[in-house]
Image 1 (cartoon, one colour):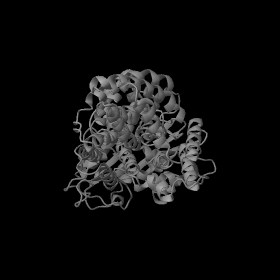
Image 2 (cartoon, rainbow, N blue to C red):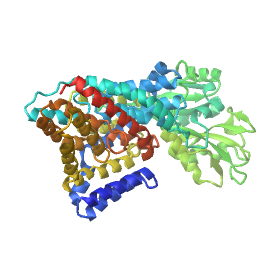
Image 3 (cartoon, rainbow, N blue to C red):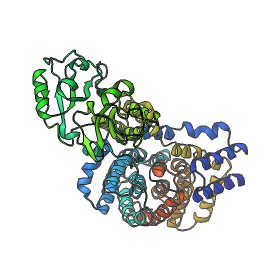
Image 4 (tube, rainbow, N blue to C red):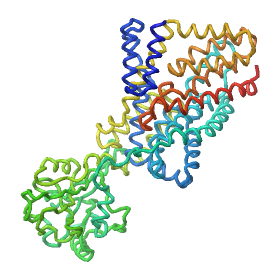
Length: 614
């Protein structure tokens, strides 16, 4: 028993200090429990195969897809119309939306879905996302008290009542408790989050590149101003021809920037993909292709008329000019030692040698967009090149020729696959529906949703999906879960619970209620809330029977104490989910979560006897 308590308190000390990463501390504690023989290897590693951990991994993938497809930005823009530029309205809106979702969807699922949306909303008003993410996690836990399925401890106490011959709780029996928690919690979190979480610092998702943004480049070089989209119809004279045969640059002084078409998977209608293709000379044009062409409007009309191409409307608008999914743009600065100096763009053969096209030249703050094929390259010229993101990144290998401005692959990672947003929305809503109606276990629904996000192309590749998983949070929770087993095996949990009944059982029911509540709350700071509820529910039941009062308020004290634990990042999965995204330290949870946890506890101890009399 002593060894387990020592390991627990040493771990907490390191968590609070923040000098060592939290996942490393948790792993060290786990290894210590194994070396001392307190836990067997099977018991110690059981956390890594638990449903909670698998579910968290899947939810990270689902949340990543919501962000990658731009769905988060779309939803956040709708919500921002309600919030305006007011931080208070934004804060209250996040709490309300989270509370509504959390009443019907697991709190872990709610947080995973809301994280990318909240980050987008925070960035739109230039607010540090950390101001909203911890309240988001806390709101999901509080809203879990509104319905029977809101959080696992609710189901635990319901099962305890039924197994002891009492009537089970209704679906909305919890609603008054949940509404009070959400109201009081929101009022408390407004000042607490403003005081302790309004940290200066880089916004999550801010550019990590020293280069210009893609929109800035397009605007600066004026690409949108002379960009046109031409639709290849079935009767077009270019169908079946290679781009090289047309020799558009030589004959018309036009530049085909890219070819775009929709590919549909006959076996899987969901797997519709927008394909961007570089305008190589051997690219064969086909019906329904869309050509992105830059050049003079008059010449574009002549070219379109000759080859029976349809000019699509509103192509010069800033919103619909260019998208960067598979193909991107970047600037390269030509060095004085470069072999391309004093050669024309045509002579260098960028397309043949490097698989990129030159769209424009910036020379002494003047932009050259017309006739660039015959333009001679000078030292210090800045070339705007276009190609696949990997081909642009490969230009960095020729460091003696030029300098690639910015980080192309990082820019690619920030590009959202907007055309996949409807697919991601359908998958997300289907997942929520399945979880609400309990069609299959929640972990199954999440795993299926995560796989569908990958299989339907909501990520650029599988590696991008893996990168969305916050492994620090996963390891932290998985390594700390066996701590509950250690506390039970060594008798620490039984010692605490027996002492509670012995000291408070003969006094006022409200004192016993307070003892059960705060004991559960304290234990949840170190072991999972579900494990604590399983441990404390029988104690609460037997305590109520011994002093002859209704067990309902005592059991509610258990589920509230287990669910409303905010002073630790590993007491509940939602707390862990936001830890890295909000750049929080263990001490942040204590500063904000502990006062909230204590005040809510006092309120609930006073309210529970009124809602559920002894």
